[in-house]
Image 1 (tube, rainbow, N blue to C red):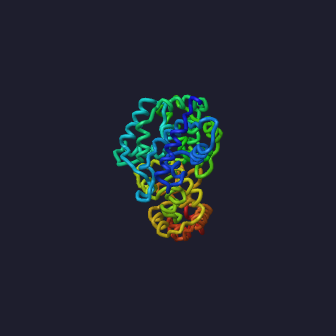
Image 2 (tube, one colour):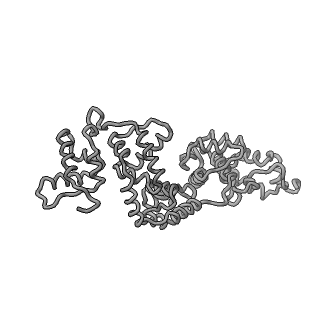
Image 3 (cartoon, rainbow, N blue to C red):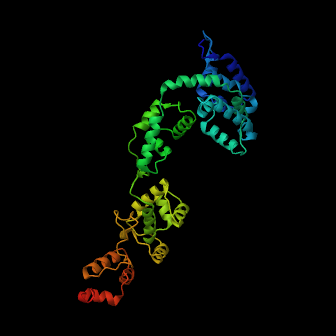
Length: 391
């Protein structure tokens, strides 16, 4: 018998006892509740029913999971097929102690050892740490409290041969996040074809123990990723918070509500309201990406809300066509078609005609355009017909 295998006979006898006690449950249900592949359990039972020249063996992890399963742990109709549960706190405290005593151990390795989902274990640890009530299956709690870390540490040492240094992967992740707005680790993992929880778990383990690596295949997939698709968008270093606020106000002036803008950019209207109402607004990476995405989508078409348009007009907000890409992010610039009261250069007929054409093209009437330019009807008429009288 191999050193890393154990005799299957006690395991098979125990499973047969469970089946005898619960003949209503299929073998697949018992396997699923023990965290074992149903094909593995069926193979064990099938081989036990045939004459074998040698004794069947099984891995210690499978044997431990099946032997720890009791009749009371099996699901039944009265309990909603959920089995018996218990307070998770003692088991979670034990897991915390194991992780603190053995930095080479990972949460994922502990979860896999007892057949629990890594996300379930992470959620239970989080809730217990936050003093929230949390219950887990009795069988899982028993296995966690009886867990021997030595086999896990041995397995981790073997697995390290299939891992690579995580530092280049982390550096590449940060480079992508600096190049793209809205590029989260989960989005990068999804684009690279990597399980997001696998990457998050590797980053968490590395933060605890810098010697921890990442699976070589996973690391290479992330390192091979150089371009990100939408909704990530290239980070524009010249985009300022002033430019973001101007874009937001311009979209409102075009008739778009904050709810419309948030839906187009994938962000809540509440977040946009908080940004726009702050005395000195500062845009996060997510907000930058959302506003820029909404700007690309909505700035070339009128919005459906007359109320948003009227409110923006009452506040003097310039519409999208009043801004150029080269000037919108410069706090010292003013929108096209809007006169600065502190600086009134002489009017010339060609300039006035150009401004009027621009303002009427964006939807203003001639009277509204003249009001925005700070001109009355009579003066505008004099400029257009008698330019020599208006120097």
